[in-house]
Amino acid sequence: MIRLVYNIKDYRDLLRKIVMPEDTVVELGCHVGNSTYIISELAYKGRVVSLDNSPESVDKMESLMKKYSNLEFLKADVRLHETLEIVFKKIDKCDVLSIDLGGGYHPDTTFKVFFIWASTLKPRETLIRNRGLIDFVNSSLAVDDFKSEEGWLESSGDDGIPPRLKELKLWSSKL
Ligand SMILES: C[S@@+](CC[C@H](N)C(=O)[O-])C[C@H]1O[C@@H](n2cnc3c(N)ncnc32)[C@H](O)[C@@H]1O
Image (cartoon, rainbow, N blue to C red; front, side, top):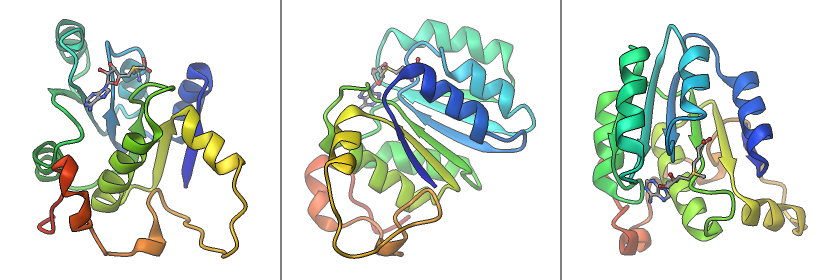
C-alpha cells in the first residue's frame, strides 16, 4: 500500500503500524533520526538504511548507529541515481520505503523520488510525508481505475525508470 501523510505525529504512528520486526526499511530524509530510532526498534530483527544529505544529520546518525546495530546511515542526495544504486546493491529486499523530504517540500521532486525508488525496490509499503501530494490526491477525480496493492505503482509495471527523468540524474535501466 502507498500511504500519504503530512502530520509528523501521524507519520510516526503509521510507521509503528506498518514496520514489522524482520523488515528491511529504507528511510529517505532521516534528518537527525527522530523517526529512525523508532524504525530501528520496530525492525529489530531486520535492517534499516537511512539517508539524508544534510550535514546536520551526520553526528546524530553516527551516535544512533552505535546504539542500533541494524541501522546504517548514508549521507547522500536521494535524487541521484548513484545513491539508489548504492542502496539497491546493499539490500536484498525492501519491505518498507519511508519518504520524508519535508512535509511542505516540492511535491514534484517527492513524487519523482517515490516513483524511482519504489519502482526499483518494490516495497510492500510506502509511506510518503508530503502536503502537496495529499492535496493533489484529495483534489483529483480519476476517470480510470488504476490501483496498486503494493508500495509502488503497479500500473507502470516493470517499465523501470523513464529516460525522460534523466534531468534529475535518476535514470537507470540497469537496476
Ligand atoms: C522534515 S526533515 C525529515 C524529518 C524526519 N523524517 C523525522 O521524522 O524526524 C526532511 C529531511 O529531508 C532531507 N532532504 C531533503 N531533500 C533531500 C535530498 N535530495 N536527499 C537527501 N535528503 C534530503 C533534509 O535534509 C531534511 O533533513
